[in-house]
Length: 237
Length: 250
Image (cartoon, rainbow over all chains, first blue to last red; front, side, top):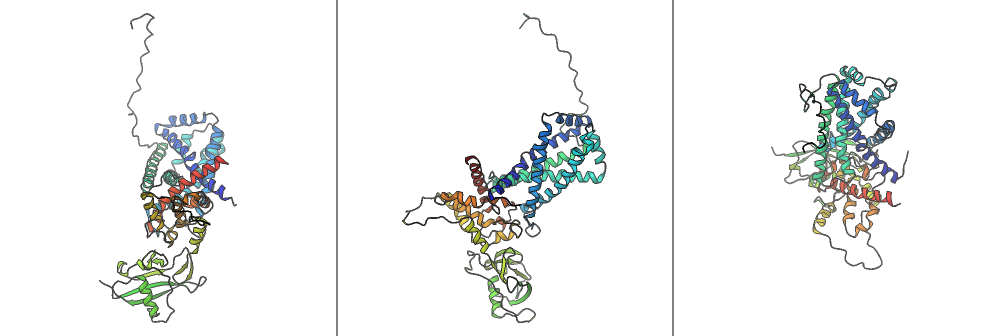
């Protein structure tokens, strides 16, 4: 398939943009929602139900998440074929990052297809009334699948974090050498934080989450005494 | 331990289609030799280390002071100018010489770098001032801008950045770092800026700026330390603005 030069530029820019908005934003939301698993099965299933109640949810899922990911994937696969990685010969940090961006992308194609099928599109889930937490919990008890999911979390975090670096240069946001270096560092920080958050929710599905920055479990919810009746009109003020 | 002899291993090829072969040479060491003077020594007596007569190794060189780029080759696997590769500065052991791999070999160490020239033509890396009358002196350029432009003007199309770029290869139409960075140079010139959009349009198509993968090897291997990746960021900004203008104005 050949496209005009103008279309090619637009497609490449949309590829870069779609990685951040909406796919990147969805990734952040997804990791945030998954983190409810740290609070237990009920909290996670409630969060999932809340998402299902969003108005126009199917439209958002199809046009705001599914199709953009598909577009990013297909064009990404085309882009991968134009490169010839040479990090073994030119061992510079950014060259490794370039290679890992492609490797993580390729892995994510397989991972996302599997993940979306099993947790969203399979007939069982489509019928609704699935205990999503229980399903994930069963899956992740298998060490092989757990490792596959950990790799998926790491790949997605890296691809998004380092993708921000490419995004900033492609769109001309970071032009100076120092600015570009800082964006690369920011990207690596995003990668680390998202990886830890993502892996912690995976641990939560097998009931072994690391609980940090949360209310201590022994904290009791204070029973508020009933509010006093409103003062009669004309009272002291 | 100082060398007494210089051992060289050279990848040779009789013509563009000929199969490559390796030949080894051993020549006496002299003080201050560079790779070019080694090759001149071989030319004087084209006999391999094993004692077999062979043809003189062909190479290309012009300025011999690292400003023309003609003698660029892989010295111990690294793309660089062989005139500036001093033997005493290289690690002990055999010195390996190969032609650049991203260009067609003409013969031995000589490659055809004309794709870079064609790319410079495609991106219109010049300032059109020819006419029928004297246009008078051009506008003055601020010192800070001149300093930055000077950095880009040092590009000698040697091909090191093209050699190291993972996006410049037979599978891709990418024009390569060096020609694209020249757009940054000519667009910054006050007279050249009048045709800025033409150069930007030329790098907005297939093989243009968007095919850069930000591996940033180019800036690492550039012998002239040209801030190539800063040019790509700046040109990213310029093409973004032009793209939006085109979207909204037509």
